[in-house]
Length: 120
Length: 115
Image (cartoon, rainbow over all chains, first blue to last red; front, side):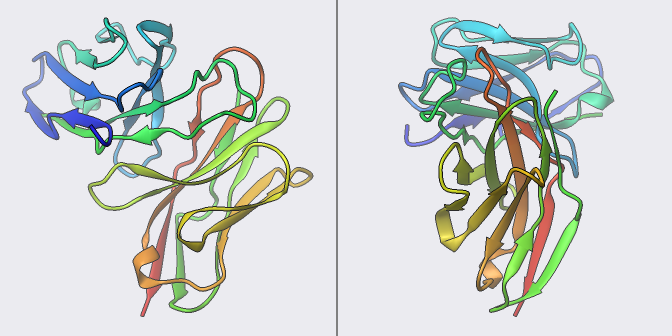
């Protein structure tokens, strides 16, 4: 597609439920990022994929959070046993270039519209 | 670890007046710097970036930003504000070290342009 697509756009979950959020990056983009944006805050880094490899998951807040990108394209962020503090907008972003090399070709991130998760 | 400070939660400006949205950063070594804009219920949109070279960077929609290494700042500017510029603006920084360096965002500044 033309841009980064995320689904669902809105998700309401009861505390303790598992949720799965999907990200469809721009075709051919090597890099994929997940960010969490709490209300009134800036995006906080969760994890980074270069193709299918998860190179950094240092931002995942707990072992209830899991992300995968098995074929180097679509990615899924899974949250198990959701808690109220998980309520946030989850943003996916992709980039044409590898973010491990830096240099003048460092490209911008293209963001999806986000998945808003509300945990009751 | 890198960090970004946006000292103003909100900036108010009248249409037609110049605007400045402030950003200072902290990073080990030289930075890559970005500005993004977020409209309601929309994802972040890239405005401009500083990678290397000229300290004055021009971007989308008439915005520009000036990299000042001595002051570790990257303020966003526009000579003449439009009501349609009203949105949430985020500054972000990434280090130049080899290996993966995440993009770290500030907390955002809300820009309100009045007619």
